[in-house]
Length: 82
Ligand SMILES: [Zn+2]
Image (cartoon, rainbow, N blue to C red; front, top):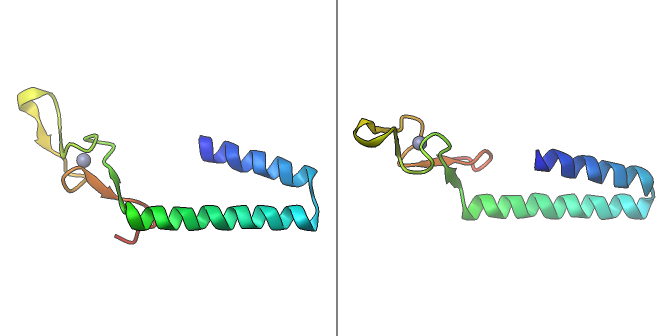
């Protein structure tokens, strides 16, 4: 998973460059990332439903059924509070 790889890479880098300055830099990077995440949640509070691929219904042809997991193909993103 991409995020985990990124965290492990960051952890390795931090381990190799253990200094007050390096720690500060990482802290700021994480803070910036968290802020970017919060802003993206505010702008895009919904994600595409993985079950129906955002279509609001799923199944082949005439067997299409409304998706019971989402509301019209949109699901609230984790942390969006919706
Ligand atoms: Zn759905």
